[in-house]
Image (cartoon, rainbow, N blue to C red; front, side, top):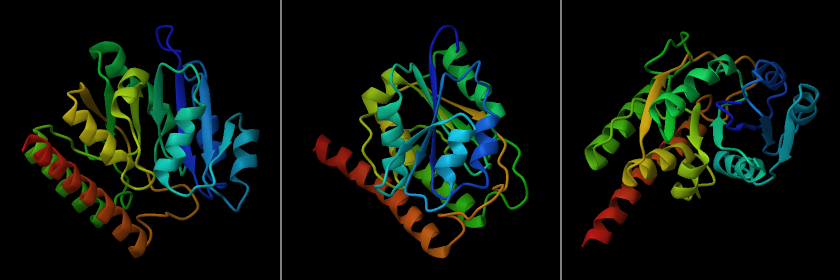
Amino acid sequence: MLDGLKVALIIPTLDEEETIGAVTLAVDRDLVDQVLVVDNGSTDQTASVARAAGARVIAEPRRGYGSACLSGIAAASGADMLVFMDGDGSDDPREIPQVLEPIRSQGADLVIGSRTMGAAEPGALTPVQKAGNWLTCTLVRWFWGVRYTDLGPFRAITQGALDRLEMTDPDFGWTIEMQVKAAQRGLLVAEVPVSCRVRRGGESKVSGTLTGSYRAGRRILGYVIEAKARDLLGAS
């Protein structure tokens, strides 16, 4: 609990039985009121391992990172702030306090945990991820004048800000949708350095395959272009 405010942690998962238990157990439950693991159609024991570690498991059979996040949001009743992170061990739950800190100290609406500002283990970010991050963040700066250094999944947002963003993307466009809409709507955004670790088990559904990397990159860049086009059409 942060200054009397309730914090919900949402962890989208798909076949992460090797890592989700350790991730969940590393969460400071004096700070985080709800740990919600959203099982996005796993065929392994992700759900049972998460429950055994003390998480509340939400089943979301509609595949897609955004679908899992939206399901977690709907289940996070009464939360004032929501934290999102991956369940593969690449994000460190012990860094949740530093991701939340700008909300408390600066009045930030949204905080991005930046892997490029923090310490990354060798191989934790692929060359494709680094290039895609740079290109997307550059386009956002050109189009909306807001500087981001990363599109990482580790982030925190107030419930009020989340309501203003009206999130809808069901898949890989989730993180960039949040950041583009925050720029468009004038939210106060902060970035903090976070560590980036090589996943602690299982297989990547995005960066680990050429198909996954292509689909994610196409959706992310496509969202940016589409959002700018809508802005231009609305101004004409």
